[in-house]
Length: 147
Image (cartoon, rainbow, N blue to C red; front, side):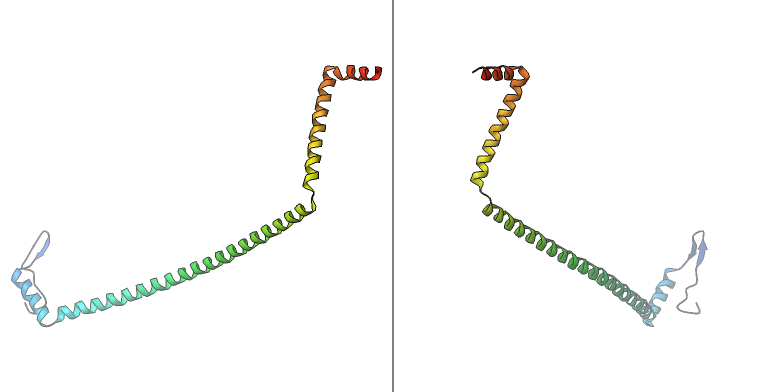
């Protein structure tokens, strides 16, 4: 082996090159002793770390954007709910005030008497209509005229 970091295959088979264990062990020990292995791994790790930082910052920006949109929607929803609640309260107060005015100005005792009289009149009209259908109304009318 001319270059201690390069391993020459001992032989080839149908799966590819085959290496001697002693050559592989020698190459690994050489990589470790000249610190080539660790610096190479560290370089790869640095690239991975920077990529991870970049991905994390991108995810953080996206999350912040979505969170801001969510907060805006929450604020709009809250404002709409407050306005609706205020409108409902105002309408309820207005209706209560209107009912109070009606109750003060209306004479419910007189109204109740009128309803009773209307119900009696409706019952009498139904009775007269039934009597007319059966012919009894005419007989009653003739009996009243004679006296």
